[in-house]
Length: 197
Image (cartoon, rainbow, N blue to C red; front, top):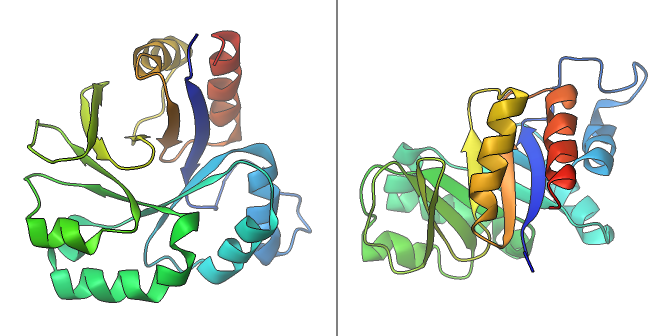
């Protein structure tokens, strides 16, 4: 029996398609969004109130994955990385660090991630001692859950073929569609349910 489960979400909370009620206060966007979808990606240095989001995640029993993405320059700067991680350390069970990398990180950088959930994406195979999967032309190296991140909006045929390929991983999987609006996210969720995931 398949253990595949897709947690679908997007980057950022600013949806452009009238997703939020007009009178919804800005600080309630996350609460409204998380009632519909199961994942969200934000930059690790986001202007969003991460502490408020962490508090809401602590109080909720719902399954939800918060992905904090970090750009490669900050990831490769050990001092900056350590400072950023230290500022978030008391909430580390509530997020997964995501970074797109081009070469194998040093042992020093990997040691900075000890105790944190992470997923590293590469377009080429790397020798990183952790869980690894390959699907939809992405090599993912992770210690908690694989995070597939797409910067392009998929049509229904592409959604189906990608979901079927990723489902071979046979685990909980986060699927982030960068600029997808609510209609596309709902379509991905519905197709994954129709496929039995």
